[in-house]
Length: 107
Image (cartoon, rainbow, N blue to C red; front, side):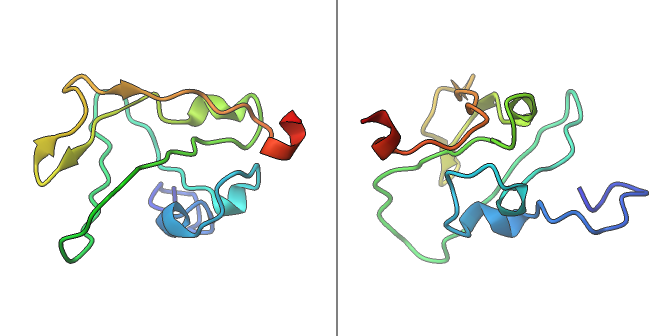
């Protein structure tokens, strides 16, 4: 968001939030957001630097408010070593609820 002309470079929803270990939140200080441009590819490339075993991948979609959850990712395609590990058309992600809940709340 800081790359948008006129934004002032003060938006705190930056890439480092992908791995800050704060996941189930509505605090946008712990969220990542990029501009969406229809028809363009929006990619994240993660290089772990060495061969690793990955046992799972978990997505926490954009969850600021019920209305703002529409900003979240809709469909994702994942590749590992340039090979598809999801269908080529992608996997649909669920929209976040716009509030924080825990397993204790489901009690």
